[in-house]
Image (tube, rainbow, N blue to C red; front, side, top):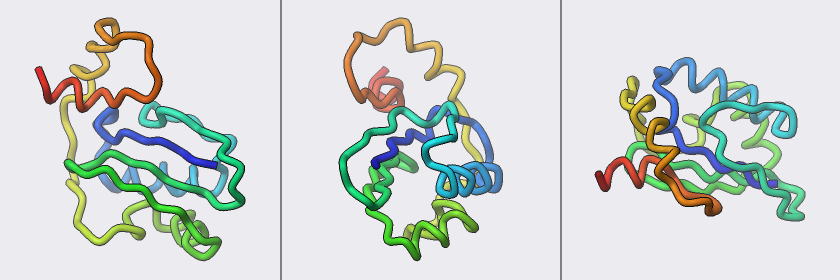
Length: 115
């Protein structure tokens, strides 16, 4: 299974994001938040995280141990950089929704940065 997340769609500070993502890693099929763009059944036994955050696009295929760690610590435990503690601008990006064409997997933060 692959989960696609755009952190730019939520203004939650990092500690809340960590708790929220930990719940996602514990129950990937039963968790829905504004930042989750898509959940794709890719036929793999492992969980893959694709996340846009802090000017990066991460794609991580998690081992069982990594998924267990992320289920406790959140996604930050899996990366090699310090993500931003605070976020702003999500409301503006959500207001851009009515301007978007109907297409798969558009990251709203890409569009808002272009404007």
